[in-house]
Image (cartoon, rainbow, N blue to C red):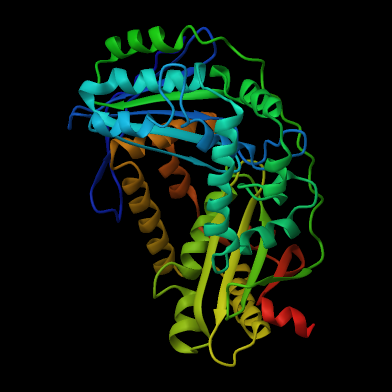
Length: 441
């Protein structure tokens, strides 16, 4: 058992709008392998109970996609002791709120309650882990819910399939090539037994972290956690052996069509390192430099000054095995996609060739530190950071150390990373066109 309490300290964040107090926490393991992280904060009578499972869209069962996202919905259906459809009612009637979300790498469930309902939150999450009801009726119900979500957010949403169009070209072997929400035909073809097997494999205590943050008594909370989660059986160890991708050494040209758009878009996509690598943090800073705010390089050039783009955005999609770095633009007027690609590459090439100015670099440092403060400005935000730091990065204290990673980044790092990952021969160039254009091809 590890009992680690970070003593309080206060670090002045240069350029940030205040002070960020070091997050104190206690962490330990139950006998069944469930990792527990506790954070006491008595500034307000609220508490967040959360469980993050190390399962996401990349964890495919029998080659079928979308299971992790599907379970995000299914595990609100009910349990042996929570009637079907009553989960949200129980939470709201006790003054709380709750939600869940799934990425390619993890699934996160949480409740926010008045602190006198801590035990209720722990009981509900233990019920989700130990006693869910997985029956055909619930599977059929949630299958329709997921289909409607896909229609709303992907199939019928402007540019809704753009990310999938890029990832399917950036990845050939790794399951990141498939959408997190999955393909509907995969869910339709899946059996009840396959869903049960998926739950039994991934939704086990030794594949999860429980975080309780807020107005709590540490010793009493430990006792409740042992009572509710201790009896849950340990599962088999989850092993992963995803296929590796060969480096991209020649530009990949791709085209996709969308019936929901009238204006085309262009995307430059690059495969980048895992989010545990320092270079991923550097890429976040490059994104801010290129397109965060009206004074950023791409926005000022393409939207403000040259009036060539209606929108432009660079962002680093951080993931556990590989990242994706995307630069996206929608043309204005008669501007061609090729012109936008040339102009965007010109700005990226400047980063590869020259060191950015000290003034711009200091702005990036200030922004990174301000974002760090904001991400841990609430109990719910701290709970999420603690869970991610342990489960995905393997270091719970990253919540306190991450700012030092950004502080260690230099202008030379920015130039080096751009040269290593953001070259024309390493990218996918995607033309994302209105469906009407397909008939002309």
